[in-house]
Amino acid sequence: MALNNIENLLEKYENGETSLKEEQELRSYFSQGTIAPHLEMYKPMFAYFSINQKETFTKTVPLKSKKIFSYKWISVAAVAVLLLGFYFSMPVFQEDEDLGTFDDPIMAYNEVVKSLELISNSLNKGTEKLGYLDHLDSGISKVGYLSEMENKTKIIFK
Figure 1 (cartoon, rainbow, N blue to C red):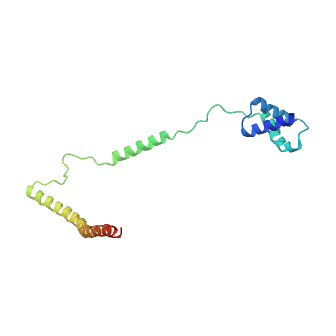
Figure 2: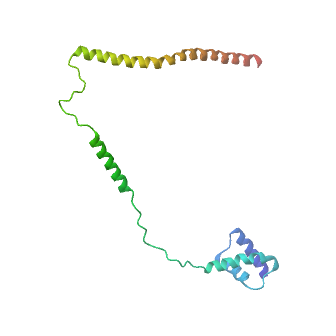
Figure 3: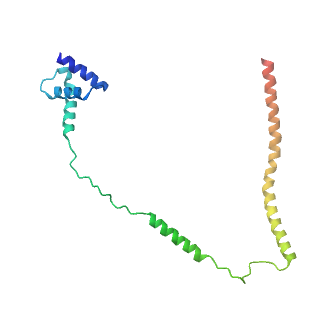
């Protein structure tokens, strides 16, 4: 009867349905000297569990955390150095400095016209390449006729 009880407990153990008391019964059965021959394969497993349960951790756990070097202050210092570099490298403008202004309005107008012509020529060079889109539109409209033909052939072959 005890052997049937152990076999039932092993089946429940493998399915994960045993209680702590039932597992204790299994451990005590497999720790004794006489075990049924067909249950010998379970003996090392339960012996391991018994030994493993008695293990303890003996090393000390440090509770103080090691001081980690903060890179935050290095990044703050780097930003400060960059800002100072930009500040001192920029030229200081004075009131009497010539900034390229024209006193003669006709001369200023002519310079603006030259600048706008240069911009216009550059933009026109870019739009010349877009002339091929007209040919693309005409090709796409011809492809639309193919879908109409396909619809007519479907009607015919139905």
